[in-house]
Image 1 (cartoon, rainbow, N blue to C red):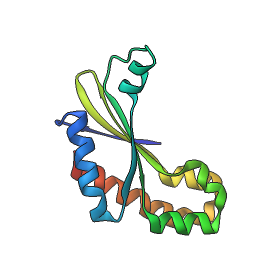
Image 2: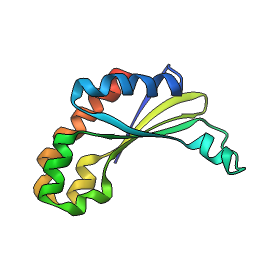
Image 3: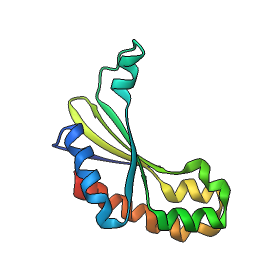
Image 4: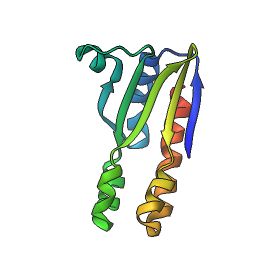
Length: 125
């Protein structure tokens, strides 16, 4: 499942908002991938703006990884911010579903984490 919110802000404004808001929820933005710029540097063209944020909570990471190191393959969480049909979209894959596929015993923490990320997105939009 994927959650998508539409924003009236530009891609860069949403990215900047997420960077500002995330610490209020004990998350940090580890890296921002500017997909359009990366493709341009390789001589390729992307018609839309697209940035992907690697976002993580140290507390959540510690809990997940100490319980099941195989969860590292879905970490850090990713929030995509992109334009499509003239609108700015903010997308998040379901953390609960991703974790449930690997270790259903950790679904409660995954759901809480997902709720926190959706709050960040809601505030940033």
